[in-house]
Image 1 (cartoon, rainbow, N blue to C red):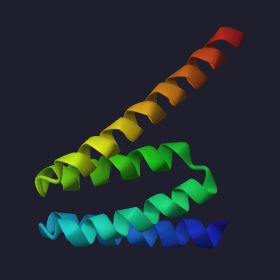
Image 2 (tube, rainbow, N blue to C red):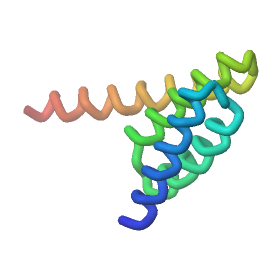
Image 3 (tube, rainbow, N blue to C red):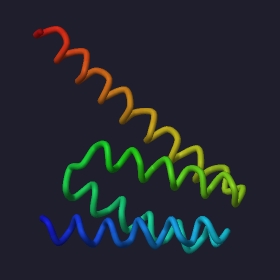
Length: 92
């Protein structure tokens, strides 16, 4: 599991570098790999952060359909996470 996290972190940093250089397609390729790892790990916050980066790169590339798809997934995760927090608050 630690090796997966290290790989995801390295790919995320590489994607961030590409994004800062304006190489959005290369950034997307890195972030997609990160997303796959985060999903395998069940890391919901990590999935959300990755989807946000994918959404932004797709917006900049004017990949409207892909950007919308990322946004919808991101919105669903935020809803699920908010519901989980509300359930925790209910018990305290």
